[in-house]
Length: 137
Ligand SMILES: *[C@@H]1O[C@H](CO)[C@@H](O)[C@H](O)[C@H]1NC(C)=O
Image (cartoon, rainbow, N blue to C red; front, side):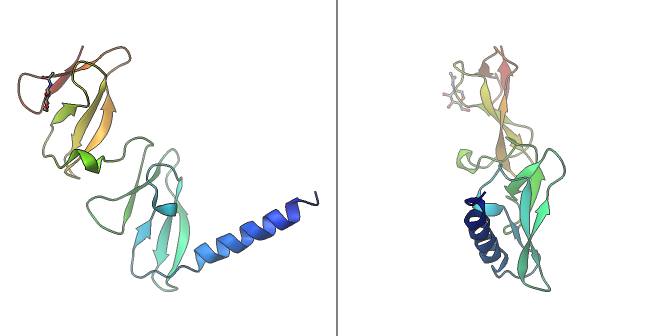
């Protein structure tokens, strides 16, 4: 009981530092700049120029929005884009490691970036006969 008071005081100090961060316009960011973990995001209040912690819909977490810098989107965990896989167009996909795992990358055409996807349990991803297609077997 004695130990909780200083801990709560320290947390209070940290959260007021975070709340005091200046921002402008309708910008937003994920807490700590980390994608895919937080159920809340920091939305700039353009009147006070302070970030306000805002909740994603139930079951969703914060991702940086790849199509609009300095904004965020809420999506199910694990559904974020994978920028290091390069850009893509249309309904295309590629295996992470053809023939050896079930992981693949599916193009999220609105973002022009890949998202992680996986074959049903026990199946592996193979290159399709047409470029940009895959199948699970
Ligand atoms: C599958 O296709 C990728 C390109 O999408 C290529 O780099 C890779 O070598 C192919 N793997 C096999 C086993 O054909």
